[in-house]
Image (cartoon, rainbow, N blue to C red):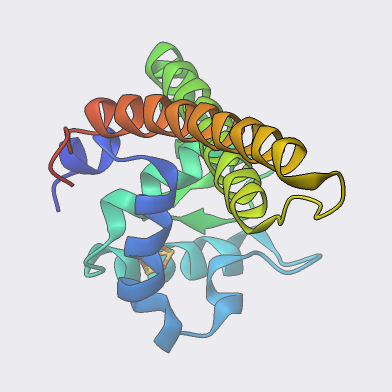
Length: 177
Ligand code: SF4
């Protein structure tokens, strides 16, 4: 994965790539963080080791991108390594790429909202489809209730299709997927 490809991916895809490919699952997690009161000289050596470790990680670009989107790094304290970058480097990169990252974070949030909407509509549709109209009131009454239920199902299905089609088109899947 190149860093350009990684930057175009959305947050869940970045996270999934890291979940399956992170090299640091084999490392001591403490390697990537400065301990409380750790002297600068010790931390510098540890930081260099951590950055070197990340260099061979197959998902380094995705990890760096997620660290930038997550706001990792502190301009006042040099205390972590993520995605092969020190905290200070992440802060500097975030400033350099502020416009792009703001757009990426906004897109992540919109994607989350869209996903929640999709899920809510699917739940409502499922619930409506399982609901049995009341048996009281005779045949004409029941037929009217069924008609209303069918209309609600059709309306929910249409809304679901609109959100799903927009999501697929935006993420490049179009109608076939
Ligand atoms: S780049 Fe470094 S911190 Fe990120 S997943 Fe790979 S090894 Fe872990």
